[in-house]
Image (cartoon, rainbow, N blue to C red; front, side, top):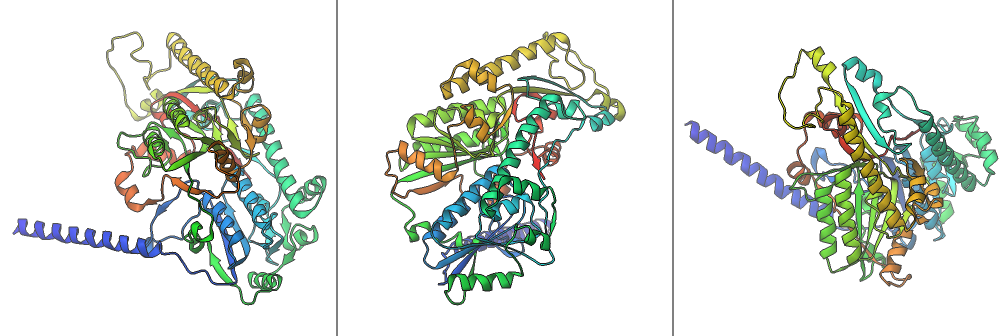
Length: 575
C-alpha cells in the first residue's frame, strides 16, 4: 500500500510539473507576441530602482508575474524606436526612487537628448524627486510636479561604511596588505573613518560628480552654474519654491500634464504606451536593424571564479567560467561582425579577472572589439578591459583603481567567545599561512607582500602595454586610485567619453561597416527564465549568501577565504 501511495504521489507531482512547464511555455510565447501600438501613442518611460545592464529573470505569469524591467540597452533602443515610430508622438519621463550610478544616468540623459532631435516633445512628471530623478528630468522640455509634492534636491554626499568596531565586538580582526597608495579596501575593516588618502579621492569624486549635476541642471534649465549652485544650497524645495526658482515648469497633476501634452502635439486623443509593451516591438519593424550583427556582451557584477558547470547565463555577477564560455561562443559565431563588451564591475578575484583578460584578448584577435564602461569599471573590472581596443566611458564612470589587495580574517577572538579551540599539526614552512586562527607572522607577511607586489606590477604592466604608455606613466596614475571617467580620459586610461551609441559607432568603424548603416544588436547573455535560476545557479554557502546581502559590491570570500583581490577600495552611495 505504501509503495502504491508513493507511486501515486510521484505521478501527481510529475504531472503538475509537466503542466507547469507547458503553461510557462504558452505564457511565454503569448507574452512575446508583438503588441499593437495605437496611433497617437505616448511612450511612458517609467524608471525606478536599479536599471540593470543584463536582462533580469523572467517570471511571466500568475501571482509571481512582474512588470518587465528595462535594461540600460533596452532604454536606449526604445528611445531610438520611438524617435522614428510615426505612431509615437511624445515621451513622458516618470523616474522615481532611482538607485543607479552616474554612468547610467548619463546614458539615459544622452538618449533623451538624442530623441528630442526627432522634433517630438519630452515631458517629465516627477514624484518627490531627488538629484538622480531631477538630473534626468532636466533633459525634458517641460517638468511637472504635484502642487503638494517637494523637490528633494539638496546637493551630494558620498558615504563609506566602516566595520572595525563591529568586528572588535565579535572578536574578529582582519589583516590586509595592499599595493597602491590609494588601495585602501581594507580600511573598512581596520579603521573607523577615512584616511587622508581616502578623503583626497572622495573629495575629487564628489567635486566631479557634483560638477556634472550642476552642469546638467544648468543646461536643461538654461541657468548659469553659479545660479544652480546657489539654488541647491537652499534645497530641498517645496513645490511652490521649486516653481518660483525655475526648477520646474508647472505644478499640476498627471492628468493635467497629459492634457497639456495633447495640446502640444495637436494629435487628438493620446494613448498611453507602457515600456513593457514597447519593449516587445521589434526594432526590425521600424527599420532599425541591418544584416550586420554586433554582439553586446554584458559583464555586470563582482568577478569570481565560478563553478565548472556555469554557462554564464543563469549566474549573477561575472564568473570567470561562465563569462569565458560566452566569449568563446561569440568568437565562434561567424554571423557576428563585432563585439561591444559592456562592463559594470568593481572587480573581484585577481586570478578570475586575469583568466577573463586572457580570453578577452583572444576574442580581440578574432573580431573587432570595443569596451563600453557603465557606472563602474574599476580594479578587476578595468583589468579585464586591457585588450588594447578602444575604451569608452561616461564622465561619471568610476574607473581605474589599478591595485591589488590581500585580506585575511583572524577569527580566534570569535572562537574564544563561542568556546571553540583549534589544534593541529603541519608540515611545510608556510602551511598555516591562510589559517583563520592566527595573524600572519613577519615571515608569512613578507611572503604575501611579495605576491601582492608581483600582482600589482603585472597589473600595471598589462595596462601600460594595452594603453601603449610607459610603465612609470601608468604607475603614477595607478596606486589603487579611483578616477571618474572624465579624469581617466585626461590621464590616458580611457579613450573617449560617451555611451552605447558611441561604442557602436567605433565598432562599426573597426568592422568597416558604413556609419549610416543600422546594425542588429545581439545581447549576451540572453534574458533569463526562472528555470535558469532554479536549476542553473551555482551553490554558495549560507554565510556567503548573507555576507553578499550585507555588502553587495564586494565578494565575501575576502572574509571567508582571503586571497589576492582586484577590487575597488570602497562603494559609493551618492545622496
